[in-house]
Amino acid sequence: MAEHGGPAASEPPVAIGPGDLSGRDRYRLLTSLVVPRPIGWASTWNEAGSANLAPFSYYAALSATPALVGISIGSRGDHPKDTLVNVRATGALCVNVVTESQLEAMNATSAEVAPGVDEFALAGLEAVPSGRVNAPYVAGCPAVLECEVRKEVDLTGSRNTLIIAEVVGILLDPELTPPDGYGIDPERLRPVGRLGGSGYMLPGVFREIPRP
Image 1: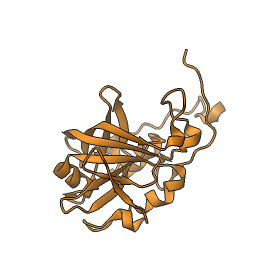
Image 2: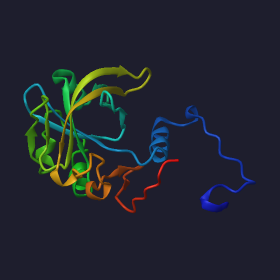
Image 3: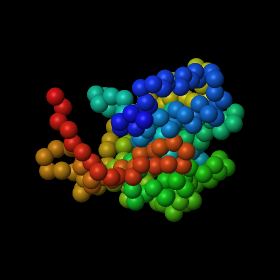
C-alpha cells in the first residue's frame, strides 16, 4: 500500500457505476464515503398538534444570505415521512443541532414508528414551542435553527424530496456565544457527525489551519 493508506501505484482503482449496484448497495457506498455528515434533527407539529422529531443526515447549509438550509427527506414505502407531511401542512420546522450528550436520544428518535407517535416522549425529551415559527424544539438543545419552508424540490427519479428552509431565528445556549462574535467553538458545542451504517463521528481533536 502507498503512504497515507492510498492504493498502491500498480493497482488501478476499482471502477463502479451506480447502475452496477443495487439500491441498498448504492446507499451503503454513498453514505460511507460522503462523511462525516451533519445531522438535521428536525422537529415539527402535525395537523393535530402532536410533536414529531426525526434525524436526517441528508442535510446541509446552503446559503448565509439569506440563511438557508436543505434537508432531503425520504419516504416510508409509498408514503411520505411524517416530517414531510408536517412541513407541508405548517410550513415550518426547527433543526436541533445534535451534540455528544444527545446522541442516544437522537438515535432513539430514528426508530420507525407509526404516524402520530410522539418521538419526544419516546426518547424522554421535552418539546418546547418556538417563539418564531410554528414548530417545537428540543428542550435543552444548545443550538436550534428556527426555520420556515421556502421551497420544495422534487428530485426527479428519487424517492426523496428536498426541503429548502430559511433560518429566521437561532436559539443558543449562553455558554456557546463567544464575547468576540458568533464563531461557535466546536469544543463547547461537541457536534456529532453521521458515518455509514450505524456509525457516528464523535468530537475528537479539533485542528485549525489558516486559509492561504
